[in-house]
Length: 579
Ligand SMILES: Nc1ncnc2c1ncn2[C@@H]1O[C@H](COP(=O)(O)OP(=O)(O)OP(=O)(O)O)[C@@H](O)[C@H]1O
Ligand SMILES: [Mg+2]
Image (cartoon, rainbow, N blue to C red; front, top):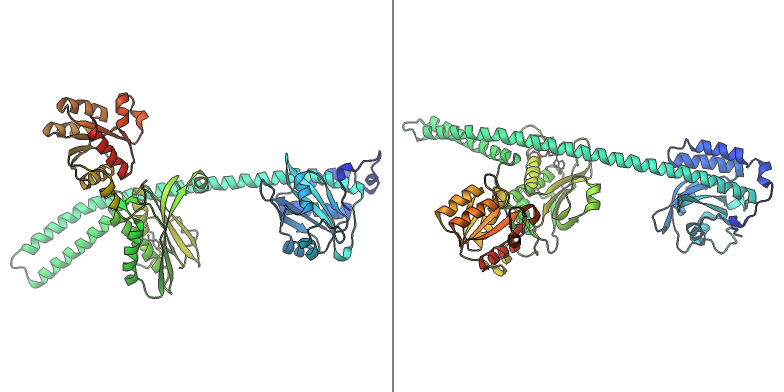
């Protein structure tokens, strides 16, 4: 029957001493344990000691899975019953198992003298394993239960309860095993942390490489584009020439055609260097995906199935639809090319929140709310050593003439320009998933654009917008124009003052921080010229950073960037209606 080892009272001379279970033996064991580098080495040492000192052939180590000690997981087991134990007792629920509850609760050695007759055992396990004697010694990790060291007999071995001296010796052993186990676990955790750090560094390096390659390509394309313009206009002169022969005419047409294609290519290269302006507008990604799939069915062979899983109530994103189509098309064509013998492309959209926890595990991630677009295929996959390179411009594994290696570089550039993230998972032989995260516009999802015109107030006043950021400027102009306002946009404070000198505006929207003349100073000058004008400040830094430029009364008029279209238009209306 079960005994509580702590109630065992030692005699003056422990009986185990004569059988060699004394301090010397324990010390030698403790010294051996120092050489254990992992849990399997540790159990091997424990098993040997349990066999040598106590005569038990089977021993095991298990650990509690979590802080709440809901279940114990077998780490290693040694002995003739090894296979059966793995089969039937890999995970043992603690609740409802008297023995495990005892171990999780306190630090008592629990001894079942004969499981065959003891009613308290977990019959589900014991019936399978044919346990006879079971001894479980708790392991502690500083101040909490950590797991157990178990040993015992099975089946024909018959029961063999431990003597008091043996239980004492086991308790002493367990203390040393606990220390060794804690050391191993800490070392493992440290190694994991170091691996994580390496991963972060690798990804940062990759990003910098991509960015500089993109800039380089963009820079070259820019110069190249100018040369193409010269070629095109020169060819056009020839084309207009009278008396040009038929072959001459055909040659010029070919030349112009080639120039046209070169221009397409440079346009793509320019996208890499972020030299393109985005036409941002609220966009329903589901609608885009639907449109694309209709087109896709024409360019993928019948052996490839195309599935769409649309996220419900998907929030809008602020995006350039032409560019988003590029992303979708590039990813889908790559998927098609990876499945020469057919397969399945799955396009999925969903809303996701990326928080601190996730960011720690995925160093490339920025916290926030996103719409996630996944394009998954069942194709060849990408070899692990290549996966870091797929976004590089000109990286391709396709035969000469079939791939330019620009598809994913463009995807990467476009996504970054949208303040999003893109990540690739792949398993060779199984398939590949590209995940594109686009930051959501913080407003309720609905059909595209419908809400903006309806619920949000517009107007017919004249509005001047000054912002040095072309994307931000474009969004504001777009929204204001669509809401009915007449808009003039300029790039900095000085130009704003000039514009206001030429004509009156009811409202002036100033970026707080601009080159040449900041928002505060610009307002002062415009106010002198146009005392009736109202002002609204846009700031990416929040009201605090502006406190030097603004009075307390102005603080209400600071619009935090980035903002969503609804709140932007409401703030505009509020500013105009203010008395
Ligand atoms: N879904 C995918 N499955 C397997 N490999 C892929 C997949 N997508 C991309 N790759 C690999 O990444 C490489 C780069 O892709 P990328 O789209 O940038 O260029 P490309 O497809 O080779 O050429 P381009 O798109 O310019 O015609 C591909 O050549 C291929 O090796
Ligand atoms: Mg491609």
